[in-house]
Image (tube, rainbow, N blue to C red; front, side, top):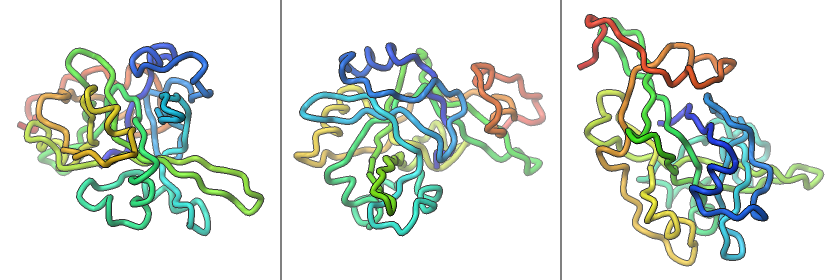
Amino acid sequence: MCGRYASARSVDDIAAAFGIREEDIEAPPAADWNVAPTKPVAVVLLRDGRRVLSSARWGLVPSWASDPSIGSRLINARLETVADKPAFRDALAVRRCLLPADGWYEWAVRPDGTRQPYFLAPPDGGPIAFAGLWEVWYDAERRPLVTTTIVTGPAPADLRFVHDRSPVVLDRAAWSDWLDTSALPVLPPTPPGVVAPRTVSDAVGDVRNNGPELTDELDVPEQQALF
């Protein structure tokens, strides 16, 4: 699964990378090196045929939910079942999005049973886009809450030593097809070689920590190696 990630590029950089015009930027959240569930995240939606950069709370709340607390349990949608689950199937049909990211964090189990965090990011440092869904939930006073979830699939072979699941990272050529809800494209899991893992500090485990140092590579003593 994906429970933490980084999305720390400037609004201008995200807009340029995703082909979004200035007039289609709608107050996305600030740069965040330690994105956690229920925090606001940047999302790219398609509206009137144009890409819009907006924000949503991470953790999808279905429109039929009695209260928004369910969102904390719906931060990920499994690729294998997303079309069948009541919480996701309507959004899959008509409310798909991209979640801009620099990479994501995952924890592997060390031989001694403790966990080693990794940051998984493109070797060239470029941006990536997670396949996502979004939804709108209304409270009793009809105030809207926009929420989102990340589609996950089986991890590629080169990442399975860290975790058996990973976000579905869309190739740039697939962004338009994913956003176009006139048809449902085939969505393959993330292929090998898209990101490279590097060991990072345990500091990422505390959501209060936030800064580029969280993604700095950490030298791990040989006896703690996971290979």
